[in-house]
Length: 452
Image (cartoon, rainbow, N blue to C red):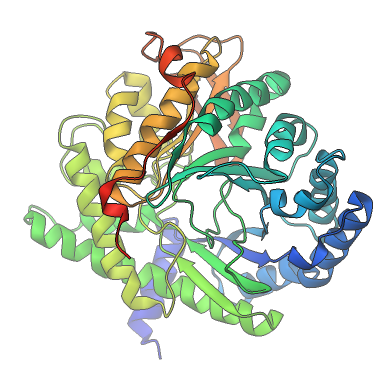
């Protein structure tokens, strides 16, 4: 039961501190839709998604209205399409993207994720064709999101896939250059990708998941910042305690929404993802939390330590408020989606090198970063390899979502609108890693992978 004080406290978080449930994501398995005829497979996919998700948006809106909790997005994740495409790989794979787009439009969700491939140890049937089709798929659809897992602690890093993804990211940006390169904002490259992530663009429904489930992603950087603003000059231990207590309250809201959505849709509850997901709205920023701890600007020395504290405290507090925690769970640092990070990047205080260091302790990686349009595919691949190495060695999820700003140079701006926001094009080290990237092969798994 909730006390009257707790209810009023939650109302204040919603009204004044930007608390929201960022997404209800329905995961749907498409394994039973596999067919060697691609048109029949697409028909099965469309029908199954529409059957399971027909009431998803309405249910989210009903819960939001009845409980007074903003639920920003309703989304769908599906089985990695490369697995479905394996049975009909000689045919035009992009048809699967069109089937997903049609289903998303029919049920009214904001995004559908799972145009994905898992190639951390090598390419299976369907993987090559799907990866090659990504630029066209993301350029010709509005709701489809794509991800590719190129490494893991257990398997190492597939450098052939890394090299390929540098080219794919660049091509995707080029095909959507007339729309601020939005296609690349819907594509993420992972190491250690989780199978139950509700957040886009990396959401997919892993083969180990049930036929259908409900996953919820919470948010609330503004709530954490507001709590810290009230703590005065307390020491770092108390800062961590305040964040833990606040994360518990935020996650409890997500648990309530998840259980209610599960009950109404008659679909099993999967997980609550604890991640603090920022928005471009002023105040709803992870960077501002770090600055509230005492940093003059996000990106200055001390930022990595402050972020490590935040990420750990969020997980410790949130895990107590939910029966099942999963996904990414921690603190996102997407540059274009965080007002504080946008300002820090514009000022030059927040650099790509500092962001890379921060990804060693946050929940994901180099996310929503605009880079110069003339960046070579090899440089993009090298950034992916660096980030994957951090994830592989530290047994954590890392990811890269870069947007090559075609026709723009460092210091200019890209603007996507909505939750994707916008921000400056950040400079890169221009020395070439091409010879290293073009060697191909696989970086062996680290010693800590031998845990059996």
